[in-house]
Length: 110
Image (tube, rainbow, N blue to C red; front, side, top):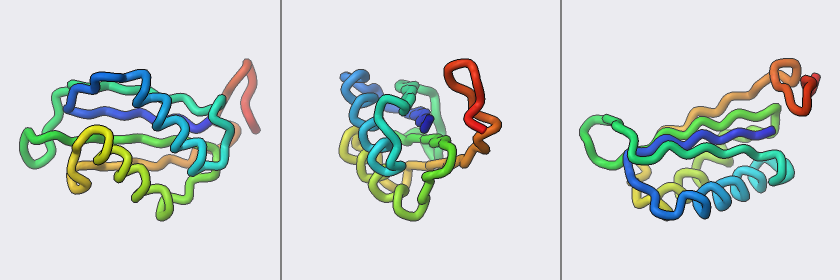
């Protein structure tokens, strides 16, 4: 049930590999099974953050399990290492979704 949406101004060469690796990272940070992590990547997006240098916006949604103070650094480090984006050009939005507002397999979780 965790969902990560990555929007970046850089071009990602191996999209499938990046999506798999970030799914594993989110799974480990939320303690949720990897099979339930959905990841989306929008690369080469027109983005502006102070200037036109490389930047990234990540949105992470989950039913609980978002320890934001412990997740921010490893996710930022991952983006920096894999995409070469400076840490100060990365925003992350964490959204804790109520179980009644998340559906899978035809029913809500709460």
